[in-house]
Image (cartoon, rainbow over the protein chains, first blue to last red):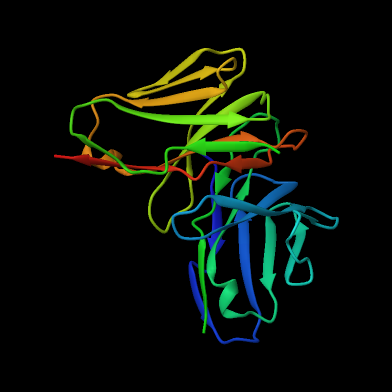
Amino acid sequence: GAVVSQHPSRVICKSGTSVKIECRSLDFQATTMFWYRQFPKKSLMLMATSNEGSKATYEQGVEKDKFLINHASLTLSTLTVTSAHPEDSSFYICSASRGHANTEAFFGQGTRLTVV
Amino acid sequence: SQKIEQNSEALNIQEGKTATLTCNYTNYSPAYLQWYRQDPGRGPVFLLLIRENEKEKRKERLKVTFDTTLKQSLFHITASQPADSATYLCALPFSGGYNKLIFGAGTRLAVHP
């Protein structure tokens, strides 16, 4: 199956700093990637759709200035949590599909962010 | 708005038995439905996709049914093993959304030896 790699898997940062999370499709090109957030024992919540070469589309309630998304190439999307606060602590996961409708999503390993 | 419900309580079964998990949805007519497995601290892994015109789909010990009238999918694991212990997520595409998925909260399955 296709591989999506996410880095880092864990990060601890101080309040007020920014953290960048990378999501790479290793063996296919992804014009669209998705970023999710997951709280303990809760469902994955879609944050935004990352579009290669254009602006990301954010879901309602997600601050675009807080969560900056860049999709500069067909194999890389980045999520930057700016001016992080303890309430931003969560599990962030990216996904990508091969590009055809109605197909499976390949997920990264996830990033555990802890803001202290 | 679209809503997905999975039994939030953990399902505990004995090894060798069949596990059955339920996914119900409302306010929606999806073209397909997917099931994923998620282990603690990991991203979800795709298991099966079933389309609206398919009643049942199988893959090894897994079986999924899709009842568009009841707006329900059942996910079965036969001859369950302790290694099947994980959280299982039901996912539907956002209406009009290209591969954007909305997930249920998941059901945690524990298979005991």
